[in-house]
Amino acid sequence: MTLINIPGLLRILFLIALFTGTVSAQDIPEKPDPPRLVNDLAGILDNREISILENKLVAFNDSTSTQIAIVTVSDLIGYDVADYAQRLAEKWGIGQKGLNNGILILIKPKTENSPGQVNIAPGYGLEGAIPDITCAEIIDYEMIPAFREGDYFSGLDRATTILMQLASGEFSADEYRKKGNGDFSGFAPFIVIVIIFIVIMFIRSNGGKNQRHISDKGLPLWLLLSMMNSGRGSHSGSWGGFSGGGGGGFGGFGGGSFGGGGASGSW
Image (cartoon, rainbow, N blue to C red; front, side, top):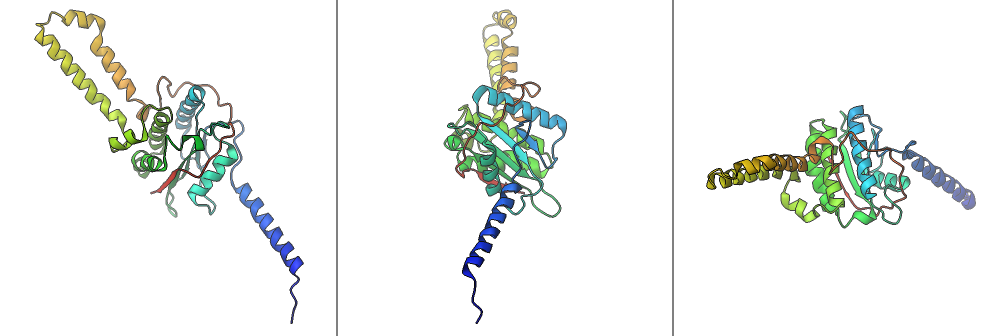
């Protein structure tokens, strides 16, 4: 009978485990240098689209300290998309230490041989404002319909706008859910039409005597511009007062932590 060398076997198993762990750790990309919030490692965005998204996210980071990072990869190298996202978010430290206000959007694009996959992972500090079910709804309503058409930019632009609005408290997750499809910008034209209609009826009911006064103040034009601007974020690469063409450089990730929340989708 052959006797097994237990100490030798344990040593071999330990070395295998150590080697495997080292390789796995190296699979996850290192933080970008110089730091960036948009990291298109899969090459699915053009330079203009990257610039618009980067400036938009930098402006939001500068004004709120909340960091939303976009990462695309061509291969998940055997990881589940949610596992990959959590590992990357923790390794990079997206969000501020102590606040844990980071969000990672991870995309593996669709190819001839594999489905597309996406994950939204919010940090500890944002799980209340952006719960798992809301992440799933953003993926279903804002991202996958555009991704199916090969339009990654529009899906990311819409999703980041909604995430910004949720993170900043502009509206709640429940309010987003009640909207049904997540497109808050659809309210703007309707509201503008209603307001213009009311103004016209008011002018007619007063025999036109207030027409000059209202025209001088430019009220309908002001209302039109302000309301239309309020709905631009989902489509134009802007949020609040920040346009896609502005913003300074990104200073780097702050060491935020993640608790495994979020949601995934595929197409």
